[in-house]
Image 1 (cartoon, rainbow, N blue to C red):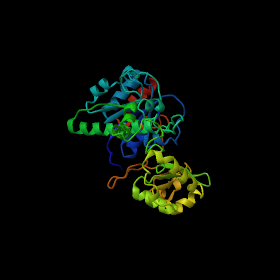
Image 2: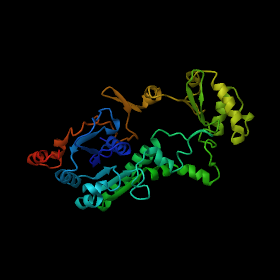
Image 3: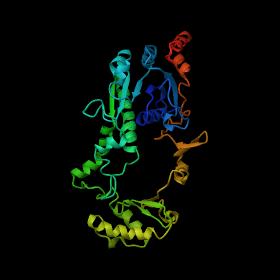
Amino acid sequence: MGPLKGLRILEFAGIGPGPFCGMVLADLGAEIIRIDRKAGPPIAREDFTGRGRRSVALDLKSPAAVAAVLRLVEGADALIEGFRPGVMERLGLGPETCLGRNRRLVYGRMTGWGQEGPLAQAAGHDMNYIALTGALWSIGRPGERPVPPLNLVGDYGGGGMLLAVGLLAALLHARSSGQGQVVDAAMVDGAALLMAPIYAMKARGRWQNRRGSNPLDGAAPWYDTYECADGRWLSVGPIEPQFFALLCETLGLDAKDFPDRMEPAAWPALKERLAAIFRSRTRDDWCTVLEGTDACVAPVLDLEEAPHHPHNAARGTFAVRDGVVQPAPAPRFSETPAEIGTPAPLRGEQTEAVLRDFGFAAAEVEALRAAGAI
């Protein structure tokens, strides 16, 4: 099932954004073949970003294994790799070699810094990449240190998700032209792209270059979180005047008393007033009167609560597979619904089956085994 059924993609095992990209594509129906190292730490079935795959375990230092990968390349539509620039070339599996074997191949490269530039060969992680874009600096309270937004902005939003977009765009081009290409997805580039709306507001004079001083960074009283009587939290975001008026009405206030609510100078006093009101009742008490209205209020749920919220339950936003709760595929499709595939495979669990599917004869598989390639 899924709109990508029929696509065959090779994924060189990695961490973070590469596997996330592979999960998204697998959920949407693509056949993902993960090329694992022959030896390494155990792989958990509960690694949700590894779901929907089959695994081939190869020793890529073996010429026989490299030759086998190139045969797999001949039958693939796309490839995902997340090594430092130059590693795939040294293995004999760089873009020039692979496209020489399959001119329609889309060769996806996932890195933090990109394939070139002064930092291209440096190690790094999500936080480092988003630090260079202004994103990390912009998140946090005034006078306090920047707060890492988990690793959602670099690894997954700016990295894996944009790699998926790039692969699909290049696959469409290859389908119409017969010509593959390299997709260079860098987390620093993707995180910068995610910041486009913020830079746009800055260009129009609507965003200050100061942390915790802007409409969407927690400075505004009508776009922040508030603690309740039970120590739990509400997200409160009635930006538009009619939504703010409804919030005020529910709280026993008059929106007309706050004509300057859009002025930063008025924010501290209004925020203090709202904070005192929200501290007077529990989170769930507030939800009974505010959640589901145009006041734009929702409970801040923890990881145990979120899967059981009535809205998430009604939509199937989370799914249970083999007794384990995990996020369901997204987005939704009317004609070709996406679905969760098999749990993450163990290392090399389907090596022989995959090789046979790609045309390897039994004798060839045994030769690879004898050479220590698999």
